[in-house]
Image 1 (tube, rainbow, N blue to C red):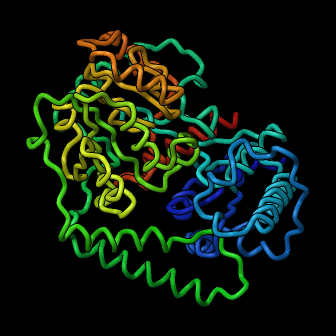
Image 2 (image 1 turned 180 degrees about the vertical axis):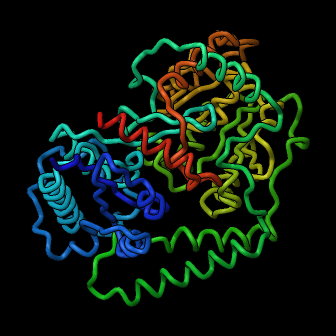
Length: 446
């Protein structure tokens, strides 16, 4: 009797990690987006069943049904460089690509990240049409645990089924509730980051920018899905600007001014393009936030820790010149320092909003994130609503008590399992690999 198949869409670092997730209980089928990822999977001793870039020219586009995508063409970070006719052709080929693979292999489940680009959304749509489980992992707030997202197009907790937490989950939640309130708390993905002026990452960015420029020149007629020239060019530009441009300082802001804190999101990012689709243009979002403020209020924006220099981009500096009550802070400042001064937080999906809520701050959420259903959080559906909320006096306390917070975290732990399939120092450890494989087996009912 043949074993069930698990289809792995190996993108980015997953081209190295997914080949480690083979198991005797299933046959692993590896699929890649790019030729480079195919080469990496094969270098790890695995066979690649299909590569979208390699197969592109031979694919006959499928008909694109009306209203096919749940999101929009705008959500994809790469394909906007093609004209509209070409975009429909690409989408038709994405549909054909996944339809043929799923029908040929009939997997018990597919493993991929949350929907971050269009071809992943097509995989989700076509998997659902065939009742194939789409396994997209998401980190639990408690480090070392993760869960499978019920809706890979959204991080919102409204899609999570209610659970009753056991003693172990409650114990972990209690310990986490103490940890997250510590002044030096940092999630695993913002630890041990390179310094702003470090030469090694700057040199890497310069080489990668040159690589992508030369790659585009030599591309000819061959199709390439991704284009990272803008991203690496941005890194070089903000590095140079950081030598001459100064940020604001919290201590220089009038202490009588009420500060509203907006944590800047890394760009581009799936939590912007998909989970905050109508607020993904952060220049527009910040400008609209400014329109919500009263005369005694100001907005402070802090860079994401992994995106140093982002606020030094021309589009943000141009915005700052137009608003006297807008302040920019560098990535190096810990979010807790800003929370000590700010009375409220407005966020799309930032973990700073989660930490602020745990500390009893008023938090307003515009995106779709796991804590948007947390008691005490205010879900914002329009800037008119946000303006009305911000014009009210800040609350001394929210309805989120420590007991309610611990119960919420315990529920997240209860629905999670051990392991961390995201990039971190222990990603390839035998224990972590075994945990992730076991989670795949359970989810696919193997």
